[in-house]
Each structure stands twice: as C-alpha cells, then as structure tokens.
Image (cartoon, rainbow, N blue to C red):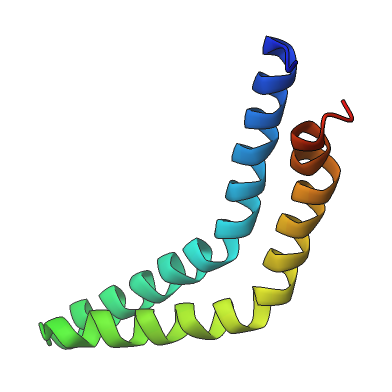
Length: 90
C-alpha cells in the first residue's frame, strides 16, 4: 500500500521532471518572442504570422534536439519510481 508520504514525494518529483522537460522549449519560445517583439517594435510591422511561425519553428527545432533527453528522463522516472510502486515492490 502506498502511503501519503510516498504519493506526495512521487508527485513532487513528477512536477519537477515536468519543469525540467519543458524548460528548454519555454526558454526558446520566450527568447524568440522577445526577439520578434523587438523586431516588430523597431520596424513597426504588426503582422500576426510574423510572431507565430518563427516561434513554432524554433520550438519544434528545440523539441527535436532535446527529444532524447526528455525520453530518457521520463523512462528513468517510470522505471525507478512508478513501475516498482505498481508492481508492489515498494
């Protein structure tokens, strides 16, 4: 049986992993948004696709590069933390 402490500890670790996994994409989206916003402010071009397309492209590139890190982190979490709880080893 899983105690409250183990549930909260697993939840805390899962939330921390979700932050670590999403941080690279969010940082790139922030940087791209800042750069595009600055470019729009300097040139007075207010095109809506100008903000959307480069941000999505940059996020897709970062996702492609960091996909192995994300997968390895999630697999490690599930094999060391969640599957033993389900199997009853803890």
